[in-house]
Length: 124
Image 1: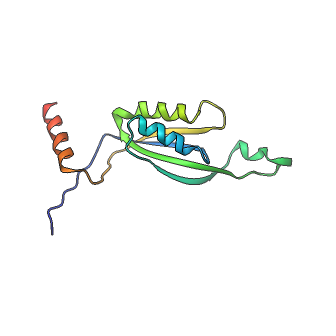
Image 2 (image 1 turned 90 degrees about the horizontal axis):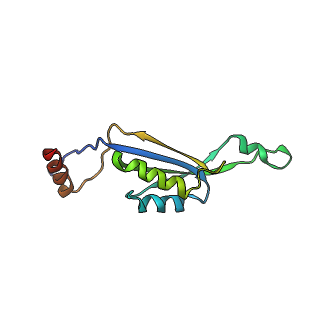
Image 3 (image 1 turned 60 degrees about the vertical axis):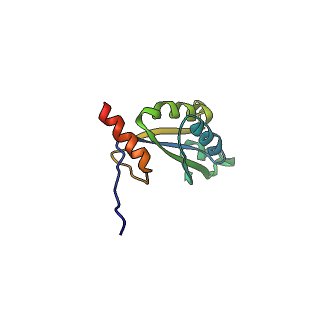
């Protein structure tokens, strides 16, 4: 069996953005332009004050898209701002965005990136 290692990232931030169905693509594009490497988008059904706005008071199902993006702590504020503006989240009913600090995150990291991180920590 090959020598395997486990590298844990400890400065990650999870950005979660909940928006109306069909709006995620523009928000993900803005996040990528701001430096995010990728995103996971999935669908959900929401509830709240807007579900009572249907015809004759009949409840309306509100389909949502949920965007999850992991970025470094240093990138988080800038990426959140770009996503907020792209999604027009300053407009009532357009969506919600929040961040969660990650204790640990792990995935494949190319050896040259691990070496570069180790060198930068050694210089700090």
